Image (cartoon, rainbow, N blue to C red; front, side, top):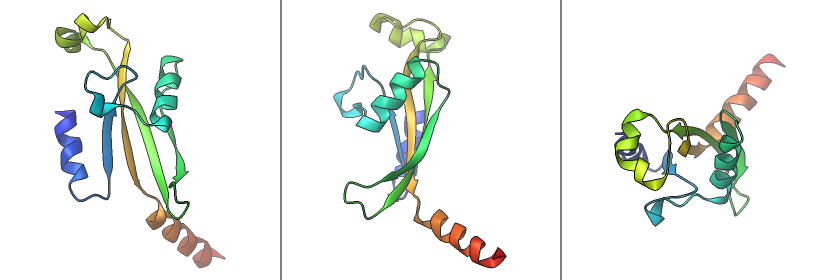
Length: 114
């Protein structure tokens, strides 16, 4: 269900959802470097990760947020064979969207109250 919601959100291209893991079963779900760092932080106990990231070209900024996906009892039906146990970090779900609209709103708000 989570993957389906992500696919619907990705359709217009403005918001990107990605379900990933440090041990992806499907190679297409491989984490990018930012997601790898977040997943390692989750395994160390961090609750979430977020930040504003510049694009590779340096022209655009994106807001990124990621939360862990923990193994719950229903997950074990499929993932126990991969060595996961209840409570383990199975992976994470990240969301990425353009930061520019927030920059514009912030700038407008600063001018309004200056």
